[in-house]
Image: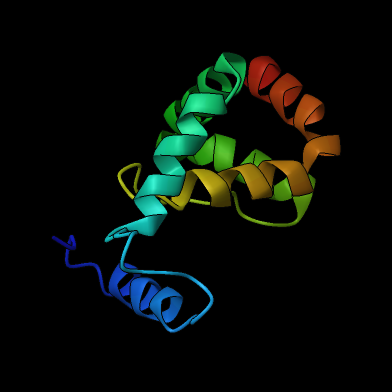
Length: 112
């Protein structure tokens, strides 16, 4: 059964409107979670560990968020770990600011 998330139900309905797919043989009630779970199977372990460490530092440290904002001009993405899109949003935020990450981490270490 659908998980009740309006976004997932809307995505499912939108996909079903595509008449080029034979939906009689395919039933995906939560497409986004399927893609998320598939992505976990191909993700390099170091990326998962790195993201886990980021999630432990930035949500709980005002100084870490301040340093990130000072260096990048934007706030680091926040969100709930149980939402499938949070990892994607965080990855995109880090990728956009990849040239600043080394300096951010150096400041985090030096400022304690």
